[in-house]
Amino acid sequence: MPIRFEFELDDDDLGQFRKIIRDKRVGRSRVAIDDVVRAGSDLLTRARAGRTPHFILQMLEQIEPLVAMVTDTEWRLPEADIKRVLEALAYFAEPEDLIPDDLPGLGYLDDAVMVELACRDLQPELTAYRDFCAFREKETARRKAAGEPTDEVSRRDWLDARREQLMETMREERGLFRRLIG
Image 1 (tube, rainbow, N blue to C red):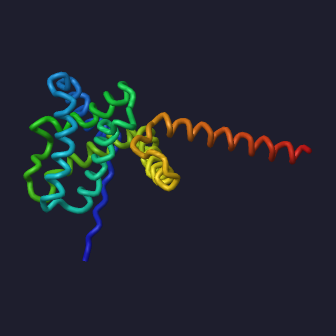
Image 2 (image 1 turned 120 degrees about the vertical axis):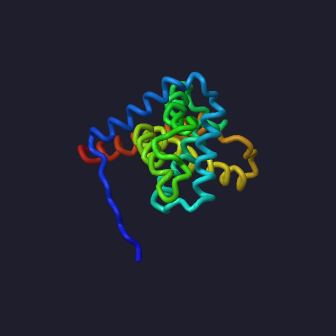
Image 3 (image 1 turned 45 degrees about the vertical axis):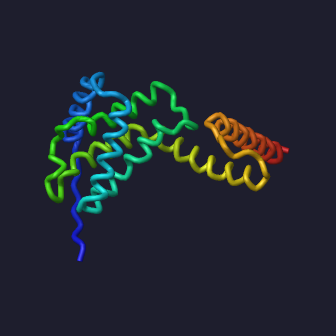
């Protein structure tokens, strides 16, 4: 029978975790981008392979889209946003963290909290990236069905489609308004 634990981090607790993240940023110049990305991926791989509690693993799974946003060549995240994602992932590139990862049961708890904080800070970027990935999948299928090349669905394609979608919504709302005041 499962047991449910809940805990809440207050502003002081969150402040301590955010300070740790800021401190890791100070040393980020020593760490290459590839090392930061690899460290995040490696942490997730180790957690999946070990006996990591489900609730912790569930939070760590959020590393995957963070890493993907930086490495996806079609997404082409702007440099400033890449820097923000890498700063969030820098915690995993450091050999020492709050709770040693090899501590049975809870070794990844601090990492899970850090991932959760990073995802909260990067929510707009994550939402846009997920939307892009869904668009890319649908657009690739559409192109394939139409016999068109499917090799590259880019951020530009996504932005153009979003712009057209917004324009269509605006036209529909304008027409509805005209009918109402008619």
